[in-house]
Length: 95
Image 1 (tube, rainbow, N blue to C red):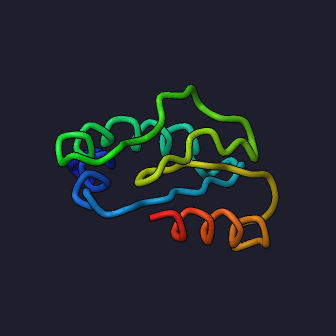
Image 2: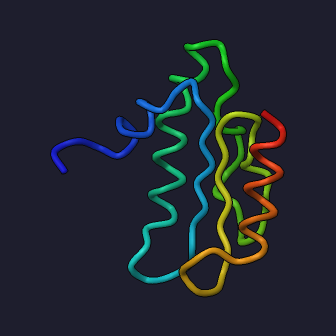
């Protein structure tokens, strides 16, 4: 694409977004996290909380899930696992 992913993510603001990464070679999980970090100031500009100020979280570490912007990653296969449902439901119940 002729633009960076954080610009696309920024267009979602001020709506809530949760990005879940999977540790597979063809996924750029660190890039996903960096995109959310780079887009986070847009939520702040619009009076919302952005991504929590944490370093790239380990697998299953939910410290990067804020009230409006969140990131979490896990091991396992691509697709939706039970833990994904738990993270999604908890995130969207809190907004």
